[in-house]
Image (cartoon, rainbow over all chains, first blue to last red; front, side, top):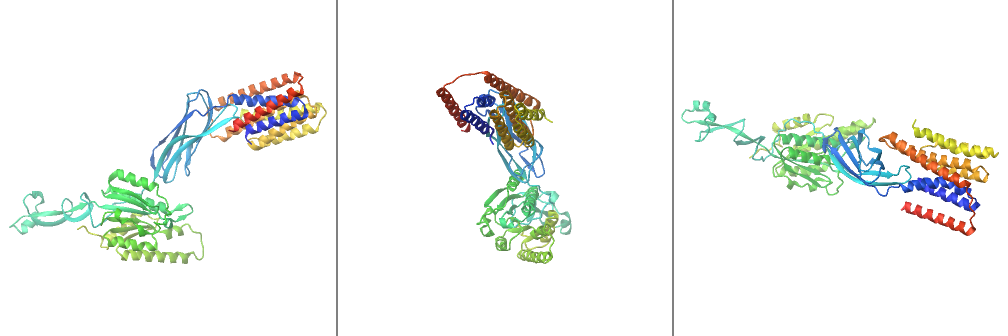
Length: 428
Length: 162
């Protein structure tokens, strides 16, 4: 029971007993209680004259890294305040060191500092307020309020390092990059030999050809290597998100997307990101480290989407991606996704599907059951058929068993495709 | 063990012990037994704020019962003041225990104990002094004072609630 209410009830009860019994001794018993309440009442804080502000360092970190949160409180009132501070932590934060609450007698104008270290899973976290209660010394009367103390940080997904990915979209960009463009120009790979034209540098004269045909000089041509537009599409539809024992397959998809973005941006490509499932969450294509930050921040907030409109790929916004560019679809795949993927392929996009295997993921977490092997076999057959259909339609598929390295799965697929797979588009 | 915890035990002992001694001196045995049982209960439920509040209320009830049984008012006032101190210290201990970090705890505890001692000392002194006073009031004046007290307390409590 509230202490003030209890004190009030006891005072009333003793007063009533005194009146009923017409005995002043009951009123005598009241005196210590009345003086106690009166003393507390006299020193009751008028208002919460406390200012709070927060500093969070760093503002962005990778999964597994620690964040230090500092909370500063200043007593702006004229008297010493007994402060009870309890910081309001966003959900899913784990405090590793330090304290999130404090009791302190803070003199007028003085400041106190609270610092703690937290760890959090991928996501964006916002601190809104801190719960502060001010009371007089006896602690009978207190005023509590939530003081604004804003701050926040993002936990980016951890991206495993990938080797350079050999993509071959039909269209390349004008900048130098790793994709052979089938055009002569600045490059390192031999492309061909043509007749010498005035202005050609002498060091490119092909002396061997000239030795065979001494009547005219020849020039060596090199194949131009260029960058490309790459669209990463991460499937966050609810039905594509498998969760077992608190672990979500989406986390693997997010990691794969982050790793691909990092690898492709490192190679100089222009990379955009679409999170498909909650709506159109789109990171406009860009280059370099800034784009890497944009993509990682978007991935930090990626979560399952329940949109009915985007439950299938029928409303896939292909116009967001430049024609004939490279699309990489990261998804466990649904059987009705094939139609849209084939349509994209038919429109000239080079499509690579990176598919975390949901069957292997679930099997690793399922309890033993006599019927389980049959069920697994059926599910695997179904999935194998789905992937086979995609491959036959000219789409490269990296079937990723999440227990294995993504780099291995990807390069096995891409190497197979580059050797002559139908998904490889050639620059005109 | 915290200093406040030790003082709490002492206050509980005094809160039930003083009225019990007073009652024994009057030849009453039922009240001391009840008070001792209450003291034991209070010690057990310490830091469970709701039950501790109930223990304090029961203790005040027991002390008030002492008036009807003719126990000396001095014993009862000492018991009442000690019960008040125990109730306060129990809440203070609970507050200290509920928070992970207490800055400058020694100073905080010392200041609280100083305030409590002052308030309890003044309360007991005033009450003992008042017990020696004899003022004859007419029924009308007594009724007026009682109504003023009730309305005033009601006003204060309503204001606090708001």
